[in-house]
Every structure is written in C-alpha cells, then in structure tokens.
Amino acid sequence: MTNSQHDEIAEGLAKKFRTKYNRGKGPDIPGRNVVIEVETAANGVKDALRQLSGFKKSRYIALPKKETGAAKTRTKGLKVGIMDQHGNVVKPAKRPGPGRAQRRR
Image (cartoon, rainbow, N blue to C red; front, top):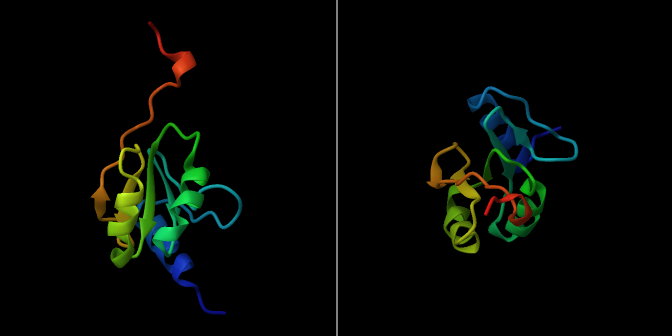
C-alpha cells in the first residue's frame, strides 16, 4: 500500500521533530513543545483548528508549500502557526494564554 500525501508529510515531520506520527484520533504529530496537524489543502484549516484546540503547546498546521499562503490568510489573527511540508515556518505560532476565566485582574 502506498502512502498518501498526508502520510508522507506527517511521517517526515515526525522524524524531523523526533516523535511519532499519530494515525489515530487527535493531532497528527504530538511533540514535546509543539503539536502539529497535517492537511493537504488550505480548505482543511477549519478541521485542523478544531484538532488543535485546547493545547497549551505551540500549535502548527503543516501543508504543502503551495497551500501555505491561503492557510496563512485563513489563520490571520489566530495564534496557530503555519509550516510547509518540510517544517519550514511560514507563520510563527504564539502560545495560547489562559482563558478569560483564568486570567487574573
């Protein structure tokens, strides 16, 4: 069985970040300080954001290079970062802070 584009990207990034590719539920690449969801097209950004919600680590969506521009536009103003299929950061992630109820006044 041949690997899909999604699997190839995920396996390559997992190797780069020295972790394992999670083929089950949850994000594709759960690293020590980063969590990455792989998509093959920018129209999958909404699903990727749902997968990454709730994590306190730096969160990234990884896509083929030709899709990164559209994904960057779709995530403008959000703390989620964008990287290409080789792990090159196109838009840096910002760590999510505490929710409104958790902030001190």
